[in-house]
Image (cartoon, rainbow, N blue to C red; front, side, top):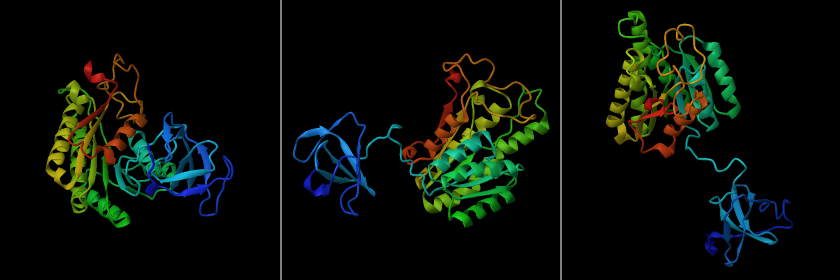
Length: 331
């Protein structure tokens, strides 16, 4: 790149790698780890260096006594490489079922992006507080509350409490789930009703409570958990999660004009802890791991997808189901 004079101001460097200049010009010179070369204002190519003074960045060459200011647009890469600005810092994220597994992983991932957290669970307050404690290291604001997401009054009260605390809710992650496993004739009706309430009725209620505020602010992200079951034709979980995908697409179509996106994430065989009730019956999509990526996935791999779908980079993605399943649906 070539730097123009209007982009530039100079900083005097006394020696490589030392703090230098006046107090307002103090900078630390570091060698950037780009493999490219920078063409300075004088037209001579030289190895890229950078120094930082507050939010200002400068470039120059080894051995030069003066560096050229280019503002915050060019930064040296670290050993970890460049990071993506998700645009989530300061946003508020509501996550249901945030006590462990996917919910906890999503909470930690959003906290790392600087998002405030509104977390709920139906009955495991101690585990919810553990999630909040883990996420608090990121320095974000966190509110936890018990809430039965199948109860409309409780959902409305929880959402209103969150809006009062944070001002608005920007991202909704419907993670709470209950599995109704077995074939059509073997599924217990009580279990079916419970799974119907948690997997479909609850997202309906939370979306209904949150979307009016997203419409008001003309921005929102909704991520609903689906799974591999709809692709396997599972009577219980597959039927309910397919209905969740239908709800998600309806929201995407109806509220896209308000800059609100709605997507699903579809985990495959993920290494998670389950309660005794959830562990009964054959696991849809598990069986053998004869899949293109022959291993179980992790909740962190899923939460990274959730964060991406909530990010500024995913603003043109809506009504989709992102499958995180090692290619299992091909089999």
